[in-house]
Image 1 (tube, rainbow, N blue to C red):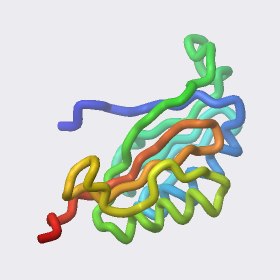
Image 2 (cartoon, helix red, strand yellow; image 1 turned 90 degrees about the vertical axis):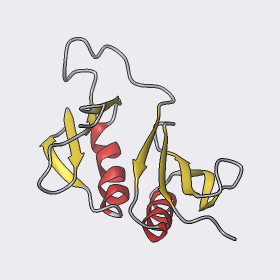
Image 3 (cartoon, one colour; image 1 turned 180 degrees about the vertical axis):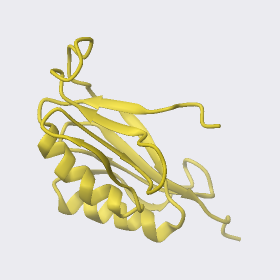
Length: 133
């Protein structure tokens, strides 16, 4: 059983964030499973429950402030998905923090990327690969 049930970002512009994540998360096979624009969208894998939520501060009374500088990771199944995630993010206005490649400074088997999204959050996408000889 996963440790986290869901993760939620709070943004002032849910439609803009949704348009970005629609394109970026599609590279991993994820899709928008909940659509309550302009207040809420949520993503997950087909046939599963949504686990990544993007919400407006107006959606729930306790969501008083937008989320700032969040970091979280999406798990890919192959390096090609990591590259596609990175390319889609940059094509849709994100900034590169770490390019999509093996980052031996993190771990010899870590193939990943970190980008800065339109709200300043830093999503990561990675897969574990076999170490180079």
